[in-house]
Length: 216
Ligand SMILES: [Zn+2]
Image (cartoon, rainbow, N blue to C red):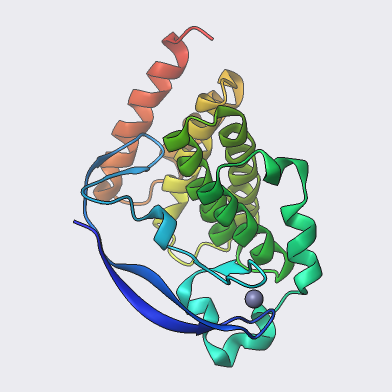
């Protein structure tokens, strides 16, 4: 079940003080093959991010820490330019919040792994709304940043390397790029470190078979 809490925030971009609801607890039963959880109760995705009602700045609650204000700040004009992009205009509102936040993370040079996860969550919001075109664009952006995270070794937890390698393959499969999906699935066994990660090998094998046998 999803529960919420309300806190006060000060916007790093325009300094507006406002209150917003965020997720306190959540649960899920199962997940899609790209780790989109099947949430039990109200969909928490719209409440993961906090958005300023004045300038539309969007980020995770912890990004509003007053001590980080300088490094989290972007110009309000930057936010306006992102909102005016053709891609932003065709995106469902919840997905747009993740897209905007990802762009702010890029602008403030945050870890590509976190940027990729923002784009991925945005793609889940599109799936809920059946906005396939926007979902594709966000999946492509997620792939680009997951690859950057692997290239630059920005994953703090090395256990995540096989998971991210699998996820890039699975996103390619969902984008119907069989060849790239095959390459990334093929890499997974080489980066698995210990037997506790056997589950990711099983999942990879299952999705790799699906990749070979589905008709595009
Ligand atoms: Zn603001």
